[in-house]
Image (cartoon, rainbow, N blue to C red; front, side, top):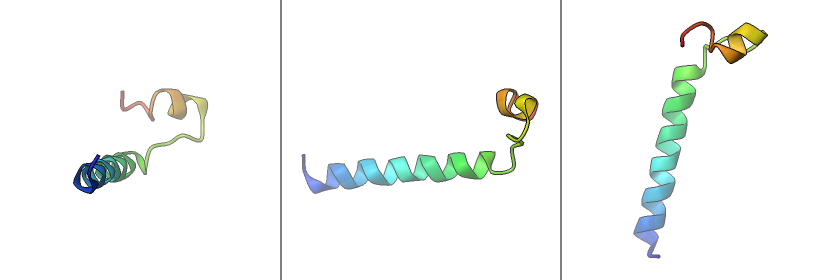
Length: 42
């Protein structure tokens, strides 16, 4: 594999991780209901 492929993979993976964290950062996971139902957003 060349370095461009590896860099693209790592960059895309980090982008997805940051977007996911940004969307779920305020989700209530302290209670069972909040954890399993994503704070009733599902």
